[in-house]
Image (cartoon, rainbow over all chains, first blue to last red; front, side, top):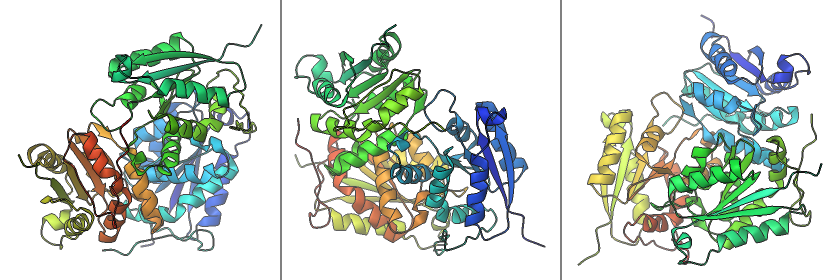
Length: 179
Length: 179
Length: 179
């Protein structure tokens, strides 16, 4: 039996992108960065939705539960503006929130722009999926993914997902020795 | 038509101060620090209340919704003591919490005193107002305001508030270029 | 009248340890580290429970309310795995969460292992008790306790607990001057 396919959800949250008024930049930036990081084979499952909380929640559930994505990465909707609701939608579908991701991503972004403190991006666990919110800007997406990815493969091990491997020159996956 | 007046709420939360037993230090320290930072004209709307959660909530709502303050800054009531309830009152009236403010303020305070980890101060958005909890001590108030203020004008832009400007020698307001 | 006895709860949360299949390492590591830190006399009240949320909550309440522990330290159950529920149990019995502890403990652990961002450990106040979640690994327990302990005696002062003193060569307890 071959190992299970590694499926990764890429969810772009953007009113303009969902209406086609705006070239979707976040999704391609995530796929490009994951291609750079991962040495295992994987498949992207991409979606674009407007900044509507029920739609975001529905799509996160679809990607995690029905599309069996072990990792779901979102881009957009994490700021303080009235339409920004991605973290709320993420928290609503997760059973556990991993505050360390948010802290680490803000710490890294803060070295680039002081407005990084406005980002409300979170990460959490839904069943056997790790969901991570990323910012909307492609350069910030890359900074954040590289900052946290060394802990992602072990996290997916702990929630009984597939075995992810990385290109060590980009990100070295860290797996502590079992006690 | 002249631009809208910039109104900033300054809320001192203190049992002793509200009874007049204690010279209110936090409020004047906030007004002094904001005068140092802001280059635009602004008006302070000041209040003093005891450490009672319903009163704090009521006053935050009054300052945000009826006094039209784009920014409301509190001082006091953020520690672990039984009477400290300012963060709970703030969270109860906000629709979004901006964890990056709390992290950044604690990180700065931690360079001064190890007990900074006891501070539970938060920041959040209520409609078109940004609410920020500050500590009670005047020197800590200044450290915290200076640490986060470069992101405040852009945050207020995003929630459709007035255009704040700063004295760049004190704090340089950062506004990212629009995508 | 002699001063009240200083009682500290040490709660090991582990399915394997509670079944006796596994040598309990976390509890002894906590007691050893506290012995190294504290210069006052104190008594450990130790418990071992499986990773079951109701049992953890019940034992935290017992240690805080009935055993009168001013400090309760847990080990285990703070990761992202399905059975890890110690932070949820802790949050459920606390009236205040002190996010600064979690930030500081993750920041220290992050210098050792990048997977520190997966830790969901929190600290909070229940009545007159400070509850702190620690990791399961003895070396990480020590790193985390040493990183936050300088703020612990003052925190316990603020919640009207006994007066803790420390060996200053290990951890210097910090108590700010009263305003």
